[in-house]
Length: 233
Image (tube, rainbow, N blue to C red):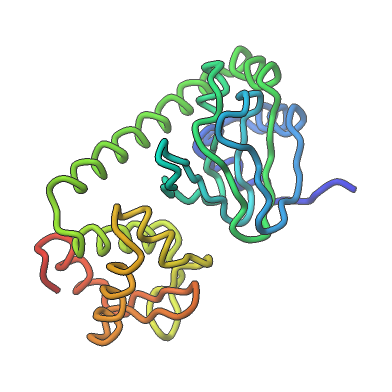
């Protein structure tokens, strides 16, 4: 059975924003839409890059396994974002796992189909390159934070990024709208589970955040921003 989705998500997405209606129809016709149950691994680190992906609903986590066996959460993908596409277009293996965090819907293309779309609509290639560049700049910024900031600042900055990306206003504050574990947060901030747990407990006590099992609410964004920028909140 075909999976229904809102085509406006693609119209506003990284790769396809601004495309004419007939071009967007060609994009959809060339791809395959599928549901992803929570926990589904879309692709695995080291697998040949043979497909490009864009999320339509839900959240996908990008996780990289290091040489020492440890893992790093690189980012969370939201609706309208691409993943795996650049590596595949470069004939490279996927550099990380992609795992659905909650029940999700994606559209994906074979690389021949995606290349044909780019030949027909060169703006798709330009936008995918720009999106990849933006992620590289974000990664460089995060690397600088790892060497130049205190761990509490890095945790606060990671929470702010998540809030800006996936914040949902509620009566309690701005809730990160998908389940996130303290281990996920530790891997994103370059910290440890113990330090993240201790820092969140302190922030909860001061009313800056409210955290429960796999849920985080930012109650005082201003104080969290001060902590991220100055080391005090």
